Image 1 (cartoon, rainbow, N blue to C red):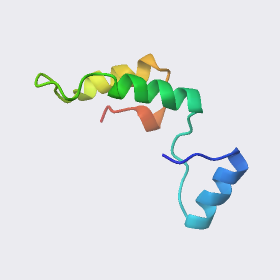
Image 2: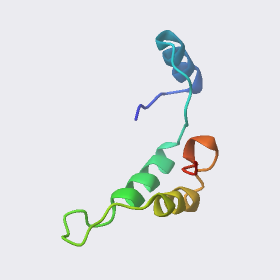
Image 3: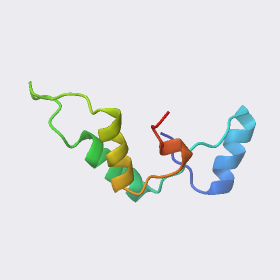
Length: 73
């Protein structure tokens, strides 16, 4: 994850490296995703990795939609 001060800064950084834009999140969206994604107790013996369907449900619940966030084949 990279933080940029403005979209033009992001676009310049991408152009300099020949990279394409993927997805942009606000700091609040990043926090919500991190809190939701890592909020479960990963140190528990019962912890298991999310299925693709469960991961998609997390993205959807946070309003993260579009091709970048679509886990369906």
